[in-house]
Structures are given as C-alpha cells and as structure tokens.
Amino acid sequence: MTRTMILMSLLAITAAACSGDTESMMPPGDAGGSGSGTGTTDPNCPGTLASSVCRLDKDNITASVTFAAKYTYVIPRLRQLFVEPGATLTVEPGTVVKGEQGSVLVITRGAKIIADGTKDKTILLTSSQADGSRTAGWWGGILILGKAPVNAGKPAKDEAIFEAFTGAIPEGFFGGTDPHDSSGTLRYVRIEFAGFNFVADREFNNLTLCGVGDGTTIDFVQVHGGSDDGVEFFGGTVNVKHLVSSQNQDDGFDTDNGWHGKAQFVIVQNVSHPAGLTEASNGYESDNFADNTNGGFTFMPRTEPTVYNVTLIGDHDYTTAKDNFAAVFRRGTGGHYFNHLWSGFQVGPEIRDAATKAQADAGTLEIKNSIFFGNDTSASQLPPPQAAPAIDIDESAYINATNKDLFVTANPLTDALNKTQPNFKPVATSEALVSANAAPPPDDGFFDKTATFIGAIGTDDWTAGWTKYPQN
View (cartoon, rainbow, N blue to C red):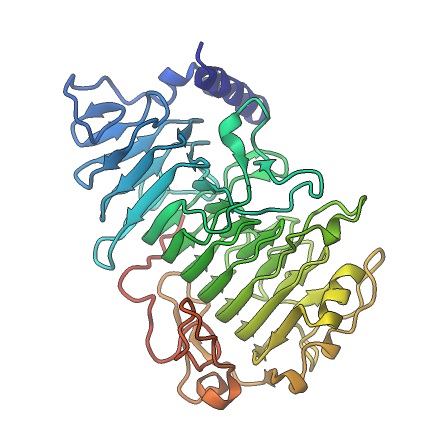
C-alpha cells in the first residue's frame, strides 16, 4: 500500500467508528463509486474521466495541472487530496469542484492554487450532494498550508502540523520564516457546506489558512453554510479583502497562532446556528497560542491583525446553551479593528482574560470608529461580568465615545438577516455613511483609503452578482 492508501484506509476506519457507517470502511478506490471511466485521457483530468465528470481518485497532484471549466471535478469520499510541493493547481473561471463526504483539498507548503475566477464566472467548491439537499459539514473545504511565521509551539519551534493530521504525513506541516510566501490566488471563489468534523475538536472549515504568507491573494471569496468556522487563520501574514462569511454554524472569522495580516471589506452573517448545539457561534474569535503553561499567551509572533470596514451580524433567535458574542478576544490576542458595524448578537465584544486586557491597556488591541446596534439588552451593548475563571473586565473602558464608537437605537442595515437574498447595505440615513464617523484606512497599497464609511459596504454593493446563499 502507498502512504496515501494507508492514510485513507485509516480515515475510513475512523469515520466508520464514529458514525457506525460500515460502507465507509471500503478501500478508498471503491469509496462512493461512480462507474468506470471511458478509457479516454485528458491532461486536465488527473483521475478517472467519465463524460464531463473527472473523478479525482488517483494519486495526489504532484505536477502542475489545470482544472478546466468543461469538467466537473469530484473529490472522492474520505479522500484528502494533496497538491504536493512544487505543483500548481490552476482552476479555470466557472469550474465546479464537488467534495464527497469527508473529503478535503489540501494545498501544501511549496504548492500553489491559482483559482482566479471572475464576477460572471465564479469558481464553486461545494458538497457533492444534490442542489437543495446539501448539508453543513459534508466535506472539508480548502486547507492551505504556507511558509509564513506562526507561533505554534514557540519558542521551541517555527512550524506545526495541522490538527487533523499526524507527524506521519509530512505534507500536513505549516509555518516557517517567509512572511511573503505565496500560496497562489483565490479570487471570485465560493466555498460551501464544508467543515467536516474529522474527530472531536479537529474540524476542517470552509477555508482554513495555516501559515499562509502575504504573497497570497484572497479577494472576493464567499464561505457559506459550513458546520465550523467560515474562515480560520492559524498564524501567517496573509491579507484578505471582500470576504463574505455567511450562515456558518461556528465563528465567522477565527484567528489563532499569531496571524499578523490585514483585512478589509468583510461580512459575517451568523444566522444559521442549529438548535441544540452547545458551542457558541461568535462573529470574531481571536486567540494567540492556546496553552499558557509556559507563557504561551505571549508567544511571538502574536495575533495582531489590522482590520477595516467589517459588518458582523448576529441573531437573537439562536437556541443554544451558550451566549453568542459579537467577538471573543482571549489568550493574549491583539488587533486593530476600525470602522466595524456590530449588529444583533446576544452579547457584545468581550475581552476575556488578563493577558488580553494587557494588550488593550497597551493599545495593541483596539476597537475604534465602530457602530453597535441591538447587541444584548443593556444600554452599553457590552458584556456583563463573566463567571470564574474569567476575570471581570469592563469593556466600556476600551469601547466608548472617546474612541468614536457609537451606540445606536435605529437599525443601520437594510435586510441583513435575510437568508436567501440578504441586503447588507446600510440604510440611507445611517450614521455608518457619515464619513466623519469613520477612520480613514491607511494608504499602504492594500487598504482602499477611499472607504470612509463604517461597515463592509457603503453605497456600492460589492457582493452583488457573484455571491449566492443556497439553503440545505
């Protein structure tokens, strides 16, 4: 057996043990069968070709290849499809890639993906289930592993292995010393119904970025309907722009392990938390290193992004055992958050521990020029004291009028809770459109300095024409 076959057999056994599904114990070459190929070959199909469907059931991608829009590509059940170091996967505009249950597409360190769609020909990566019957968490989405700095295990080491893999899989490592590393381009790409739960607390997301460098382009990307986070950053320096994280069941935008990138024009629409789920679903969840035994909350590089023009939307109708926060800042995280619109969460942004309070005291964690509407029931819309072991932190010392934060009573958004045709534009009379309320973004080559409004959208709706909101 090859290393890949061994891995997939182990995955099949694990999934079967967790689900009671004996069919999933079939050898990987037989998983989810789709019939035999036609016998024809095409360099655009590194797998089995049958009519217009390319089933990616052979080896990992070891040489550069192009996925052509004339085919639909299917990643077989439980298959972790690695694009190996040195190879580039190019995906043509308009191409559709479908993941069967438990599958995932992995771009390894030293590999690239060039998925450069257009507004009219968006690239779609989705569940293999039928339209209208797709379910959150069916597959694992896209995992990109880069060479940029991370703090996983520092000061002892500069790299880590992704949580769903073991050291026996060398392609699973991420991190390094190159902040300008490039893993390629995702532009006009939609990723749907991912977040496969490999084992407890080791989930894939719709989009997972691990140690990805700022030579990578992430622009006009929608992550929709997943069972875990919309997008999660594990360290790295990658910058993101025009991101829609819609109707995912965990956090909309999750940052860990020293992410030091930038973001602008981000929408989080957290309105699809399933009844009975006991895990909180937050707008932001921002951490540094998770274990403070050896001072991990202060490991460098420390999570400290710079983020402008974001709209975060929650829903008071969640029926879970935990409150859902507009943001949770914890474990010594920092960050600079400007021109944010926070709306409808059960609890406002929370600073959770002493190490994170120290960041706020030092000015390396700040929330300024932002609008708050309809978060919890207090006038301040900020969290009450938390139960032990959390410490009592007065968030109003950091989120207040002195920092040009506004607490409003009129809904500033048009139709942001709509699940099928949301409108994230502010109403014409909203304070979000008053330029004097906003902080001018930096003129540094990344940020759009003309975006002198609060929230992700001003008068121009950049989500129109390429985003979609399919339901289960």
